[in-house]
Image (tube, rainbow, N blue to C red; front, side):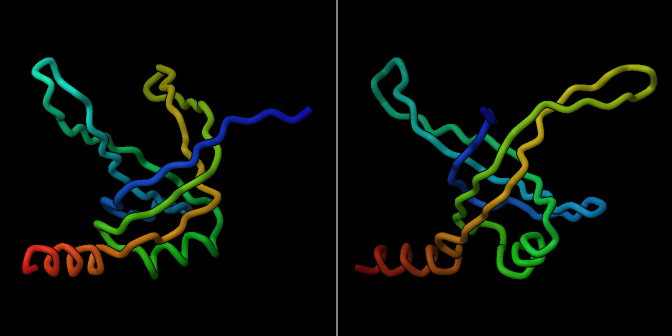
Length: 117
């Protein structure tokens, strides 16, 4: 039986960077949590997703911009490397699918329309 660790998440694009043959996409995830006073506080966390497949990376470079709402899915795994004789551990979020759900420009237009109404 095959087993694997998968993610399926939504968030807003922060920046897109080419690193070697891969594409790194930084995505913000915001959620609300009730505080001790009963009010809701927003918390934003950032994750960096790596796209290894050339055709998917090309699509992302050509179609995604900061602020766009995206859906990402893929697998995550631990990795490590040596730096100055010390082992550095990390986690790779390997993105196998990315979808543009709402461009920032469309969301801005929607918000402007609703403020005017």
